[in-house]
Image 1: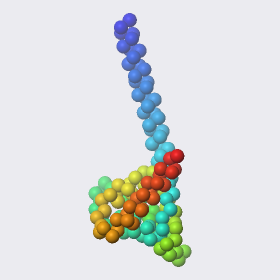
Image 2: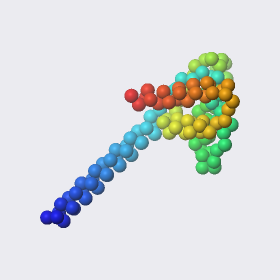
Image 3: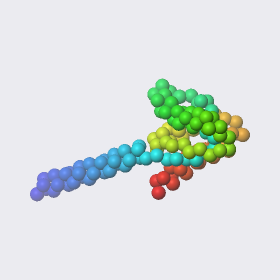
Image 4: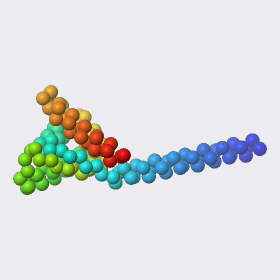
Length: 135
């Protein structure tokens, strides 16, 4: 009876872990395909591009860096093509992993105090957009 009880307990423990793993995997896959759409001024997009270009990255981060920078390159190109002003609002579309990579890369930036407000506004906008989308 004791062996049966241990086997029974072990079986359900493994089963519970498998269900939890499947749920976590499904949630991660769902987040990878969901997009957020933060609204930034064209000047904030340009500032973000400048900040990204000023940081040091490691070799294993090149792909993520180029993917994130590409989002802002496209917005700047479209804004230039459409003759938009720096105060015009544009929508940056990115997945949760891209937004996470952006915020991680931006945390490495070194800047003067005068840029702190712009930096905070951009990062707060990205975070708020992600939080709004999750609700």
